[in-house]
Image (cartoon, rainbow, N blue to C red; front, top):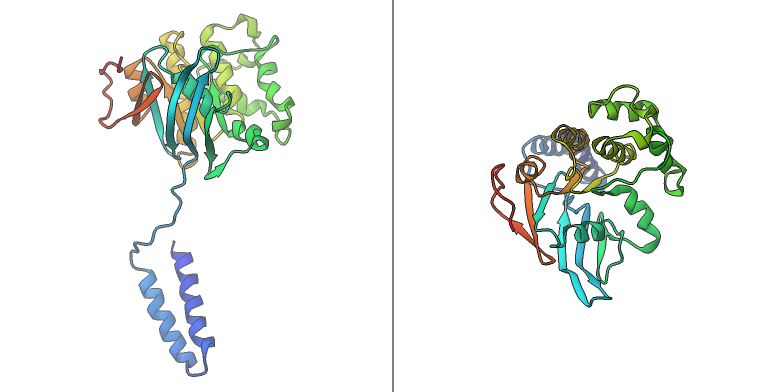
Length: 284
């Protein structure tokens, strides 16, 4: 940051000049020159910016009716720029984890932090606006694709923004849809088109985090690749601000869509240190 360094140098020089009468103007100028030269050199000073976007601190979920712990005490941090994949057997707790991270279900213990601050009850709508959950089977309203995309803007949490049809059309185009896609009836959409609609509905709202719960599990290969392309384009548009968690049973997809791999086993989240191969089978 050369500009910031020069500003600091000049401030130091002024402190020399104004601190006491014994510092002459020429001495102050010499001091400024020395500090500016030092500021131009590589520095090891680092700004403390490594605060997770999302931090789950001792998070627990239980099924009170069955007396079963669905999610064991879990502490997990997701930083900006991270793409995480979670694999595991059916019923291991992957969806429970994602829904808990999205604060869609109440926590039985622990707390959620967003940008280093605990998420209080009144802040949950704003948190969910930025930490978006994408379910495996999308829920669409009657009407057209555009009607579904306009719906969030009717909610109180999004009344400060307006629907942008050009932006929505651009996202649809990125997913390989035709120009008239927004005019199609929701009831006539294929499973892949319905999931694309649900994803665009979220992406247009500019979330920081995507929590993707097997979003392509029931889709054909072409639709799966379209969903992947949309998520990848969203992430690449601002990797310093975005992060994602992708739950998948497809090891090749998990490898494509992440650099960090976690597994779930009986409600326990484990980190896998070795990078996941596209040909590796997910942990049972």
